[in-house]
Image 1 (tube, rainbow over the protein chains, first blue to last red):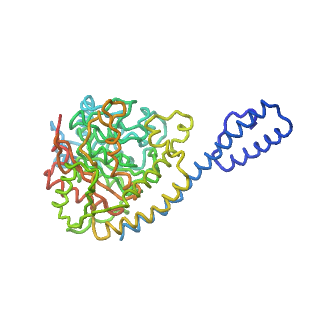
Image 2 (image 1 turned 45 degrees about the vertical axis):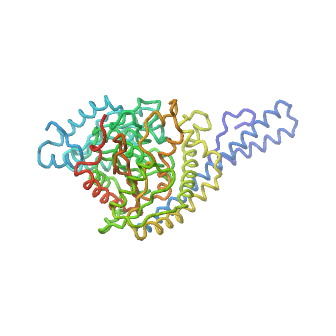
Image 3 (image 1 turned 135 degrees about the vertical axis):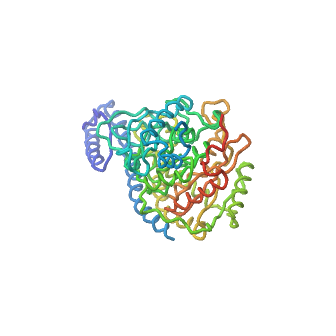
Length: 84
Length: 438
């Protein structure tokens, strides 16, 4: 996985996010170490994409988590209400 | 036997009397389906999936045609997006398998709105299906092919799915019984999802007795509650705004005929529940179709339902689900603790024409399209069962339908009541034949 040549930004889990975090750290270090203006611009765009993808991934994971974790409680409530 | 009976129960009588054999019945139904589809255009693909043993089981000899959203043997469903394809080893959805083990044969898979996103059957990827009652009248969605197949007598029943009215709206446009089951009563294993918290598998038939038979096979029957004792205690809500006078009049007449004395006058929670249903629908549909939405490859139909979900705050969705138990409990306690059935509108207006609710039409009226599911989505949020049945005719002879809601897992009471209405209003041959044909 290279920040300068990413083929895709695909974050589906916390593990993916952790992996990309280390790449972001590398990228920041690279920028500190005197990247050219073009490289810095490219890094900025990639970091922006990563940020959007990470936000979206967390949003998606949260939605799926809330959906499944509330299913059981709702099913139990429906059964209880059927006997009222 | 030249003419097949119009209802599933009628066919079973003929089979018992040995007027026709199971094999002859299935062959005749296949022929009828093929002929009628030339007029009504609802078949995506005919299937040769015979029952495990077509001569034994309560549904032996019965031909069904289901929405193309269920896995079938070796076939991935097209879900209104494509025509499906062969997939070796794919096993049928649980509900389909149960029906087949009881002797039913699946004759075909039928069309639907793309990915179940749509209150009508509009879908540019397939030929438009035709309403058997009046050809210019809309066929509601998203289980549009199911409604056409059953109303035209191409099949004795159809399984569909209902996330925000997708069984009840097509039933109301085609003079059918449409049953949205309690959330979780019929397994969604092998069913393509839209919004999992709201999705329910349900049934479209021409009569209440037919629906009851399919329900007892497809559902987890240990969850079903017994039929409530007579006389049923019935309550009604006829909203005083945004209801067409013909619909309001039919509902009030029907409620009085049913002996309703308890009327819901004001119900402010309805708007709240509708809003919560929309949050859950949009959020979960966006999750289901996330990849296509982000890639920009989703259709306009999917975008209309799912795009808003990408920007709905996660906390709104979570809160809507957390509050769901409280809202359902409050609804049951307020409306169904002392009553068995709540009567309310199905469609707030007479059945519209395709021209007024098709997005590309010069006569398109967005309000009429949105009105189709005004009284639907909140029932999915509450998780309760609901039946739509026709009760009267409008000025064109098209059905005016009513919606009946009961406590969770009280489908037997709903269908028993629907059966009483059917025989009282229409005789014993089902709902559908009493409406316009043209």
